[in-house]
Length: 68
Image (cartoon, rainbow, N blue to C red; front, side):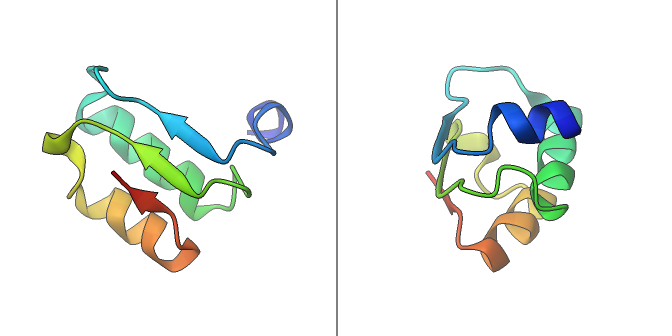
């Protein structure tokens, strides 16, 4: 996670639209967010079918990350 954290520490918007990230990818992204990586992230753009993924919502809500 160290390299990811350093490379994306200033990232405020992450656009994963039109991506077939699927449940395993969403679970990994949720875990990364829940552990405090991507500290500047404010907006996460993903396909509508993924916007209510329970783990992702649970990781983003406390940090105020908007899922669109």
